[in-house]
Image (tube, rainbow, N blue to C red):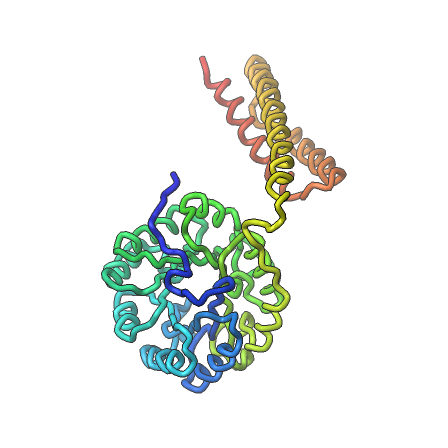
Length: 363
């Protein structure tokens, strides 16, 4: 169900924004010098609108660097004073939130682990109630759009209207080239459920490595996201956390120079009419696809009845394996993505088995 929450556009709280929102800064603040030196270089690039710096770092295992602690809030205050940039950090509980608000931070965000806990989110919501802080909500570690949406609703119900969702990827179930699996479909679902919610991307945590930052950032703009959160460190080789995914301010500028920013609408007066022609063609093809699937269902039901009459199981692995191989080969010849073809026919086959077993269960 679509929800039209009265969430403010980013320009409401960041009126000088004239490009997509870019939030940048170290994964973790480590020293006052590191925090300020990085900030001063980033502030020279007018595409950077908010400075980020991790103060409290939730780590998977004890013994890792868990952040410099509350002293980092003073460094963020110094960054804002010396550069004029709004500043923000991640909060993971009510105490963090209280300290961040007391320090006057402009932005706070809830991390993926915290978003996964409604109790934690509610504690944070109770603290920010009545404030004008900007609250950003990262997706939970697993691709549960309702959990993500629920966290956003809790913050909204606390009276906060300056809310932004951050897509940072999801814990992968198998080995991938990225640190976290992008699963763009979940972002599309969130956009459909909350159409006026600003959504930005965190390529640093999706990629996990500098070499993948550009492709993820460009994909985010291609998907219509409104900004990026990219980690930058004065010397990533010395970083105490997530060194492999951080860029120097100079390398960040080079990455930004390469990016193509997409727009929701075109200046070409013929764009919409030509797009409508192509969309109408897709509508016609989709209708044909559904009619073809309906004809396939009729045959599947006949197969199910025939199997029942002859006391044969609905699921037969060998024919299914051969069918999948044939469909994938046909798809390759038609230049269709192999994973798409496999996923499509897996869904079709699962539904076919479901229909056949329902036929067999009938008296």
